[in-house]
Length: 447
Ligand SMILES: Cc1cc2nc3c(=O)[nH]c(=O)nc-3n(C[C@H](O)[C@H](O)[C@H](O)COP(=O)(O)O)c2cc1C
Image (cartoon, rainbow, N blue to C red; front, top):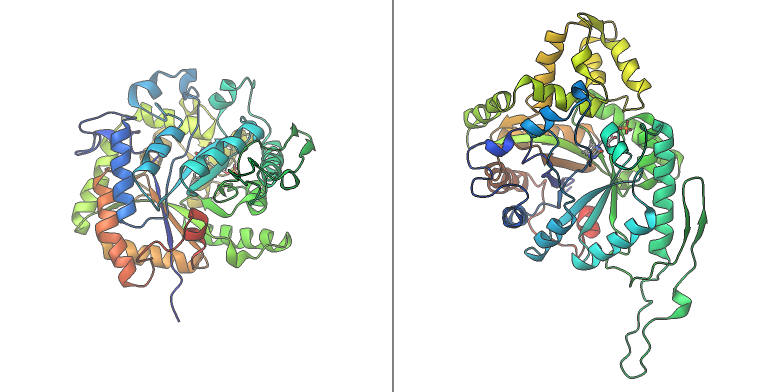
């Protein structure tokens, strides 16, 4: 029997941040967001037959650490960022098959605008667009959009479910064969194939239909990365494929089971919904080469940059840690801020136990390894990486695949993925040897 094939995305979000831009060979003759550099990455990724390129997003300049943005600006921590939408359009014009995944927040965006924008992007990319919907866990993002604080965690996910429900109604409001463009008669569209939308919900009041021609995929591929029980429930409702965080394999197996249960409970077939696991990697011709590259991660930014990164992502100012504290009490304080309950401190609890206590020095020692990606980055040659990916893939149900990313050095790591890792996975029957689908949705559906 043929082995189940993996799907591979490439996460470009951090290739210019957290000091990675100063690795040898990275961003050498241009600085972010140079479009030519991105176009070149797209060409290389398509040579490797990857499913799609992805970027996460967030708007806020991190201010949680010490209540100020200086460390984030000085060391490039989650800053600067761009809306990558026009850059992905440029990348799509120099490629034919590879897809593009953009991130938008259902907490801050409006569904009418978003549905219309994604329709246009699906046209321009010829059916290669995906949307990663995020509920947004960061205080400074919320303030960009006029919120005093973060909306309560559960409400953010209720809003997300309503948001995508409205988008789906809008995308369905123009049937696939609604356009005529008949030169002889002059008829443009078929009125009976355009449908009203009249949504009046808790968060949104929206009248449709969309005023756009139907797009090649009808709607973008939807992905979402909720990791908490509420986030996973929302993912089960809204996604074509889920994203999930890189964490210990037993936690990933647990998350796959939890996700399958929820999918089954709402009548979806879990065998058809993959999870793409975030997987930071660095690859070398030899293990030693890859290990040496990973080692550099620890030297790229100073400790205050680590503090800015962790504080921003956890929604808690770690510069105020007392001399000794319990991890459990700390995570409870984080949860009370309405940030995510399953972030870095939750992972520390998983490693050290609920009753563990720490000093700030110990916390930042672990923090440095986490914030730089050192701890999470799998370093090795193609065989070693393929072994690890196969083990994870099988343990988590052989559905979906991996979002390779947070690579240490771009484009060297991407070239390593396409020239070393992909051939090794193909040799094992685990990865495509050509693009078969016409759209991103079709490519992601291949088994
Ligand atoms: C692969 C991956 C990509 C993510 N991308 C973003 C992003 O671009 N912006 C963002 O605000 N959150 C992002 N997140 C965070 C998730 O959307 C989610 O908030 C997080 O996993 C915590 O789960 P929870 O919201 O259920 O508590 C990402 C998470 C993962 C695993």
